[in-house]
Length: 231
Image (cartoon, rainbow, N blue to C red):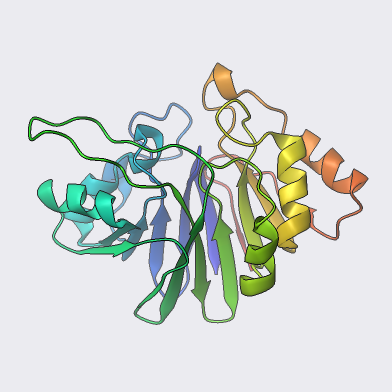
């Protein structure tokens, strides 16, 4: 499995299928590519309806034929905006797409989408996702604050990799993310959702420092947009 950081909270996971998560690209000043650069995708996961997460997901799904996966209310929005293949979910539900198991888990955040000329939508609750492809499992926390039930995510799904926000203001900061790492017990922790704008400026090495202080047996991988690693 290859995990590629595209910037902000966007990732491309390539295993048995190509999965995009929160593809905020065209309006992201630090993204490593544009939506038009995505020629192939099988599944697009969207954690919630804020613009920096919904991003270019609709365009990518329409251009590639990928399946749009999100909380149920957001899939209705996608359908009304021309996406033909969707899978709606809700908390603790699991779906399987071509052998890949996707579980929706809690995220402590808010969610909305832009009001449309058809009256607007509720964006539904925000989600995190646990993605299991073969023997490897990845947890994308979405936008979230710290909550102690992250321990259950670790115990139930045992993610090999956890992608955790550290930007503070709108999500956890580095210290809180270190405690999240303590709960989920992943071998690899990847910080995300930081340094896209001045409002979420953070030093990711602080996450390394806090993880070390907690004496965790986790590697913190700091990625620049375009970087990737394999597990």
